[in-house]
Image (cartoon, rainbow, N blue to C red; front, top):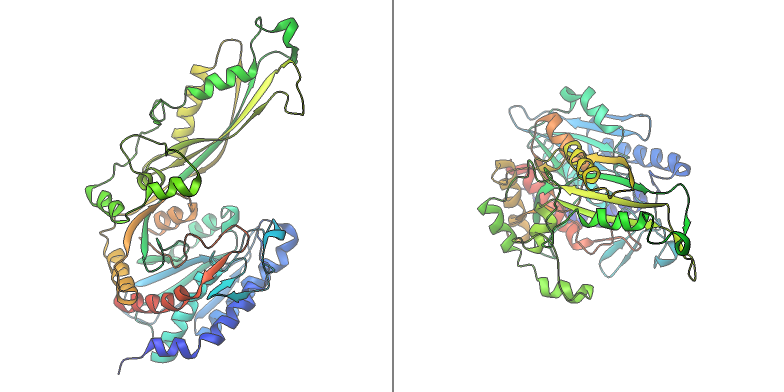
Length: 453
């Protein structure tokens, strides 16, 4: 006799939402030290719910930062093992005055649950806990073996999880890694991400004279740090938006015809985007659509350029130094360090006469990429279709979640990214929320997926 999970989740909906509200009320902000106890409290709360759900070997592991929570249920002999990854830490809430209701007082309005962490990632992670609980309560067994590995530092770039992964490969070994920390394309249009861009960043400083100089006395006779910086930065791209750094595109995987087709299926409205952003035109690497540029192509962007006098009025000065901050989003199979090396070589080669360059590398993270034809991803698309009535599209996301590539490569397992958020749910911003339609449909989708594989 088959179980009616739709009826089960409807019957328990109020209880489940009240539990989620309780978790969301804990201000587990990993970036702010004064919330360290709150982050630990959120980890303990999750551990208790995993035990209540019927999971075994539930542990809260201390790290040099915030705890990692693990659990498992390994009684499906001969069946695949799925590792569920997520994070229980959340972003800071500033600016607080823009929230319509307090960020840690969860509130439902118009079918949406508002709170910090509602969609990123407590709300989405909670779906997996309740889906596994439902299977165990209704069928007294799971169709697959399940492991959980949940961290409290994703919002601060997961400094301690990589070491834990390296030290616990056997404990965490799995046939697939299931992650819900991304979005649908739009309401009713599910998506499975097959790529997340990597990252590298740097700061550079240009120095000229040993002091700022009077532009009347010295102007036209000495190098100007701002002029030198502008000249240097303008050498990084050609007029068609392509990065001019030799070696920058080494390792870049070209899009397959199948992925081109998946991008086209999105039917992204570039004209609407221009209107929404108040732009006369979009810009980027020639030969690619907007969604391809931001999801599947590498970029080099100026994030900050400053130097010289910036106060009110004028000051006739020739500045002695100028600065720039640069971030690159990378795709498979680019090496972040090789990209930084190529940029450094380019900058030194193009530094104007009379200027001295200081190059300071910062963040580095590899891109994640997976072939959408993998059976674990195809079954995920089937699971979405069984609930949403439309098959999920395979996408590539422009953002970076560095730990996904680390999880996949360390455990040698495919990462299946089944997101249930929506792009407009204000993650990292005031009034973050989770559409409860996808709370309901997400539970059913996860149950169906676990029963399909």
